[in-house]
Length: 313
Figure 1: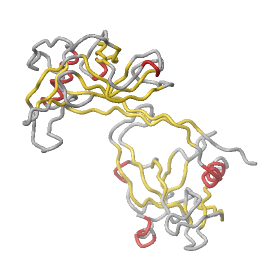
Figure 2: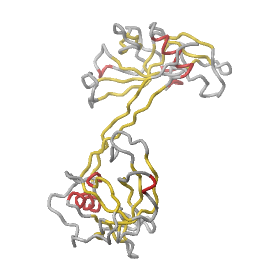
Figure 3: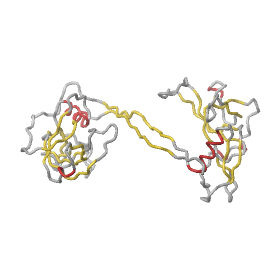
Figure 4: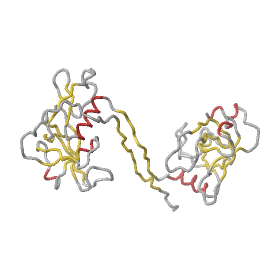
């Protein structure tokens, strides 16, 4: 049996957004240990607050303080916390309707086990020791047997308002390429590009997926393509990516390898970025020990005629 290929992959980026007056007041309030909701025209108080009534779609902006205590409306036990979650030990995800609110807030409940959690139980906010104006200023909820917490009487006006947030987004997963792509990857280790031909439409797809995306039938016949190809479309990258040691600007292009019916993507080098063009003939440049071409460079051949690659745009 051939070795099953797999690799850990991470997709990560910072999500940045500005805040309107409602969200700004809510997050600034958390920094100051005040929980604010927003009141609708019919008297409902929504926590967390939104800028438009989910029932009528009317803009809403009247702030209303609610208590830092509340009632669990539903819950689910998290027996294995993941990186970046509120608590490092098992905990419950809970929806809490804070006293004075008509909607529930999702957060973590610190409890010794699932037997200690129930719908209807009373809880209160445990504030983070260091607060910056984010939902994480609520460290978690904790069980609470008392009455509704005291209000501060705050009207939602603060000094040094929070006007924007940066939330890191990250997805960790293990990818296994399957039979077709494993063959493609193994061929790359020998500096070869191998696709698969559809038995119905006879098109050759690189990288192969194990099935024809047009006909939907399984593919198995391997076909070596390239190594040269034609730039079909491209873009000029002007923003430097973290952990990528390439100076901007540079060009990323779709390249139709000779003999392939699907363009793959790659970086274009060996030519000024403003001289890259559709139809440019290119060839791969490999680095020692590299598992795929580092970039593609011009071959010096005349540009390909548009009619030869127009179906691959």
